[in-house]
Length: 152
Image 1 (cartoon, rainbow, N blue to C red):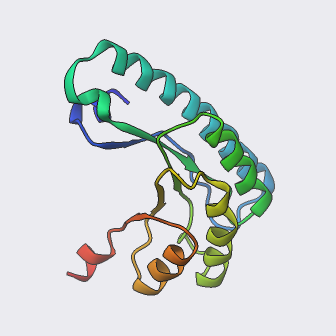
Image 2: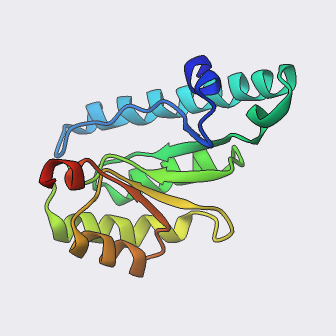
Image 3: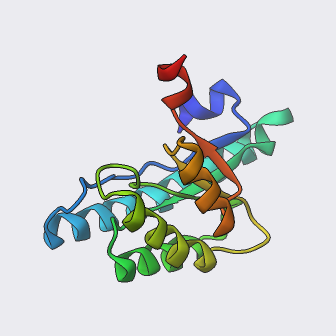
């Protein structure tokens, strides 16, 4: 968190544990627990840093990362936990990691509505135009991906 603060990025991310696609339920539960604990720690660290600093650093927006693989109940639990922290924005992580396009879109469609309408929704690591269009249709606002650089 300190490095993100010192870099001065406008949007900074809470740490998360991105489980592999189709992992066993125990691994998924471990990832959710770790992601949620880290989000709380990151939020506390961000609050401390913001109080101690002056200037533009306080304008940094800390986003929580919703995890849960393609397990819709796990995604719902993660979204509920993170939105209770009342962060400035939320990311959907752990998608486009081998679950396939249709399952990814189903997961986005089920998860995005669980996040606050008035806060940015960011889909991590998705860069194919067809995927972006589907995600926008389901309420995603922002994206990032290495794909354009690889293709370039």
